[in-house]
Amino acid sequence: MSRLEKSLILVAAATMWCAGTSLAADEEVSDTTDLTAVIALQGKPCGKVVSAAKRGENDYVATCQDGNRYRVYVKDGRVIVEKLG
Image (cartoon, rainbow, N blue to C red; front, top):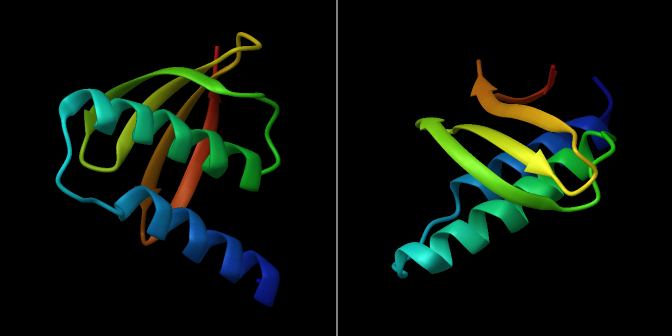
């Protein structure tokens, strides 16, 4: 794994785990923004995440404005982005 790949994974993981005290609406906006960044860093087509459903801790299903859907989760310390359907 190259140094760039390691850096991108670290940024993506840090983005997903960054948390602060905020209202639920703010968290949803933050989640969609963070998921948009994570999907883009993985080089997947999306544009912008328009909705996200939390499946578990660090496990989301993101729906993009272009119609693509992705499962974004952490496994063995790595951020995984899988295209759904």
